[in-house]
Image (cartoon, rainbow, N blue to C red; front, side, top):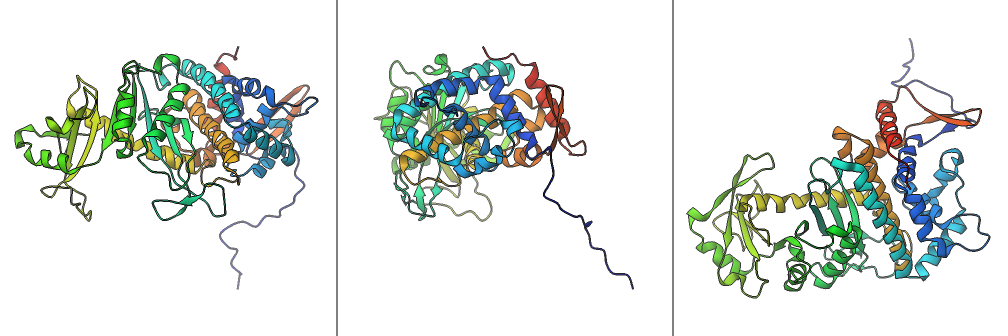
Amino acid sequence: MREPIGSYPRVRVQGDGRQVVSQAGSVLLVETIRKTGLDRAISAALAPWRKQRAVHDPGKILLDLALTVPMGGDCLADVAMLRAEPAVFGPVASDPTISRLVDALAACGDKALRAIRAARAEVRECVWQLALQAAPDAGGTVTVDLDGVLVIAHSDKEDAAATWKKTWGHHPLMAFVDHGPGGTGEPVAALLRPGNAGSNTAADHITTTRQALAQLPKKYRRGRQTLIRTDSAGGTHDFVAWLAQRGRWLSYSVGMVITDTIHQHVLKVPASAWTPAVEADGEIRDGARVAELTGDVLDGWPKGMRLIVRKERPHPGAQLRLIDADGMRLTCFATNTTGLPIAELELRHRLRARAEDRIRAARSTGLRNLPLHHTAQNKVWLEIVQIALDLLAWMPMLALTGMARRWEPRRLRLRLFTAVGQLATTGRRRILRLARHWPWTSHITAALDRLAELPNPG
């Protein structure tokens, strides 16, 4: 009787392989850094923190950490995966050197953070110019989404506190530029807050929006061409008044809490005033209708604000709330945009849900936890995470096409970054040969060709 041979072939494993490069597909991120000039910008920004006779450039150290995060790293020590491949990633600093740099940046507080953010803003404008029609401002407008994210702390960390979901950790407030249905999005602000920070704190929303606007090209830092979207956490008098302040003139689409006053006005809206809601493809949204509220419900709010409410038949199994009416789920938002049908404005606000995708991507790119103890250190880590998310947005925008532009970090990591290569040296040239049988090798090589066609920085 023959013994079963099993489902998988049996191979012998030896640990003496040479000239084999793991994570070879991450050369896409290295080329993105080179072509966008991010390495030069970060190095120039952190030049004041480079000590005399230092071997490693602080900018290179920070970018090494930012490269580690998209590849699955979630702490400083994970930079060892880059250190193991000096032919691809160059010399990488030791763990003590990296820790000392993070401590030095944290000790300088906002000065170091401002330097890093200024470099990112400078490079962002260049990237958008390189991307042409793939850039988020190709249509002449920019949409910035604000949303909070809960980061669980599994150990005692500074400023960790009980959250509104009865967990323990931090409650950062983040802002993302929406790339629309054809892309993903890129982070433009992240405000680290204690876990018990309020969801609808106007001061935090204003601070985050200021940081986000500073990341945009100068022409988008004020004016109607920039749209700020939030959920109901941003529906406060102070924040809406700040957005609409004279001289700022930002467009906004802000969720609102259904108060008793709004509820009473909804009950008085005649049936003829309700308009069918629409989907992104132009089709009518089944069971959903929208209407605009007017009258004294707008008292106390900035001039020009419009209040639009939607009622929709709830999904099977969903429970109605006390603020709902006639068996329909009610939602409401405020905007100052004119000249568009209310159904189109409601669709535009509903697309704010893409911010949830950006939060999910951030969680899988270094924001699953904050690895350091002190708040000042974790603020530096949050900047590293944002640089990593920038790279994961810029690389597809510049080098990928079709559905690949919408791949989230986990899929990019699985299909592209984990590809294995073989390093060959011919004369003075180093050639990285990717595995021919890898299903997505063609995506990697085509993306590298597109990056090679871009002009060199400077």
